[in-house]
Amino acid sequence: MIQSFSHRKLFWALLAACMLSTLAVLPYAFNLQKEVIMKATVSLPVMIIGSVIQSALLFAIALYLGIKMASKMGLTIIPTQKIKGGKVAMIGVATGLAIVLGDHIFTQLGVRLTEKLSIPAWQGFLASFYGGIAEEILLRLFFMSLIAWIIGYITKKQAGKNAGIMWVSILVASIIFGLGHLPATATLAPLTAIIIARAVVLNGIGGIVFGWLYWKDSLLAAMVAHFSADIIIHVIAPALFNA
Image (cartoon, rainbow, N blue to C red; front, side, top):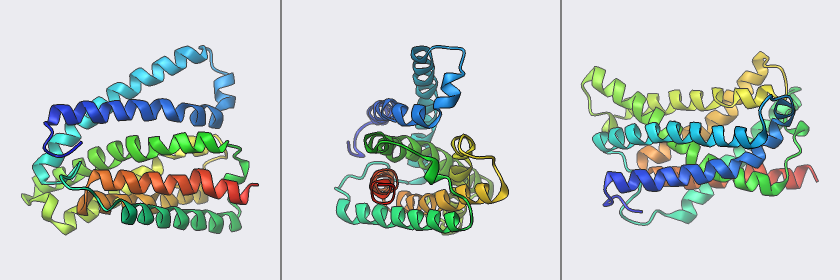
């Protein structure tokens, strides 16, 4: 996939990737919310079909608008040249380690959420594809681009080349990224002020790094970094500390 592809081909390629990542995250999501699922009044197959249909509509809208906005602002989705995959992956690894360290600090403050998780490594690995693909499309390609486009439209400035606009967009999208994890967090513990702060801070670390990569490099770079960070968070760290 390269930038010379038409927007239509790019749309369908990314939508297919989103749907595959949505299917990949289902074992992780169902494990995390198994108590809720057990109390559900509909069967598991119906829940899966409903989730897939809902996701398809959501991602189709996010992609259609996101690609248009990114193109107008001069933001790169898939670069014409290969990204520096090793360097980007290491940025992701460093981000994942920072988030793991931050989680340890919150654990010392009495927020013990990760200790309640019992997620097999293979489920964490599959879930990492959802983070790297689907979340980047929703949070960076759509939300971050939307915020930048709105500010640029109001201020009459070229958003993609204005550092102030882009940093505001990165920060706002990062906060939304953190708040978006609260429903999953609520299945583990009541949402107190410190737990909400944990969600915003830890996810905000990733949001800022991935948003910066999207702005300065490409959405693909943000995807690679996000996937690498999630491998640390969902696969390697649990294997080391929960063994």
